[in-house]
Length: 373
View 1 (cartoon, rainbow, N blue to C red):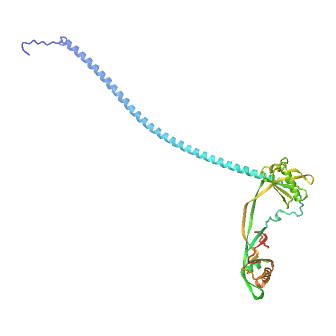
View 2: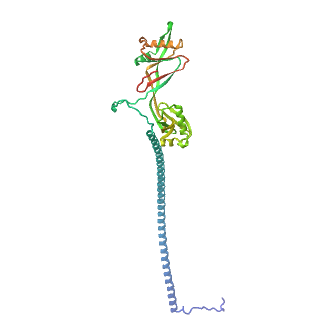
View 3: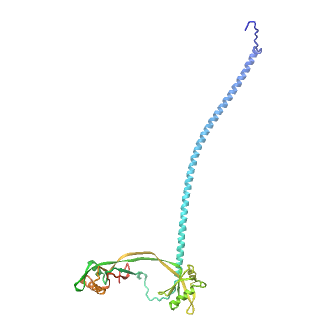
């Protein structure tokens, strides 16, 4: 800047004075104090926000812990409910099975009751038959138990013989000796072998009976020829107006004097037995007959055991060297002699080679092993 250039300094006349400076300082002090207040407010606001942030952090941690606990509790409750549901399903299945068992038992019970009712109806409807008791009464302790004797058909092989002795001890001697030399005519002899007889005997027989839906039993019949009687009964009970139907078979039971009528339809018999008494035209007049159910029997339990005949011996290996009757006599003569370990013979049966013969054992039972031919 040149010396000759004009220069001027403009100043605020109010600041140059003491009063102006004081006023300026006072204003700056106010501004400073105002800034200090704002700073305090900002610091307080900052502290508040920090406290709030810390509280939020703590609350967040608590909420997270609570959520974890709730999740764990919820999982446990779910597992418990699953176990409870499983237990309930198991109990339900057991109850359903029990219901099925009860239904099956009830069905069996109904069937058994029906069967017993049918049996009771049959026992109440047994054909009447007059009998006369000619025995004597005894105390129960003195009575004899019921026994059943079997009739057993024993097929014999060719070249064998059966000998029944009167005493068991004789049969034992013959069996113990086993081989026997039987003398024949002309100084000849044959060798035979003695063997025990084993029979299969029944020890228990249980029979289950039920009402036949197609048959009826007709009793209280007059004495007349069998064929006309059967024809009259078949004609009467084949008519629907008499409650009958088509007859398949009509048979007389000779031992009881009753008639068994078999129908083609299974629904005819019950109606006739329910009525029970029927008027049938026999011998040119009405005769009242009695119609009762017919029982079908079925073996439901059958037990047997092998039993040795104590007095009967089987002879084997007998050749056909002479006439049957002659050879049988020679066998009987031989085994009657005590010197041949024999004894008194009750019965003898010889079956030659090539022949087919069967022996019948009667009065044989497991508790009383008697035998006959």
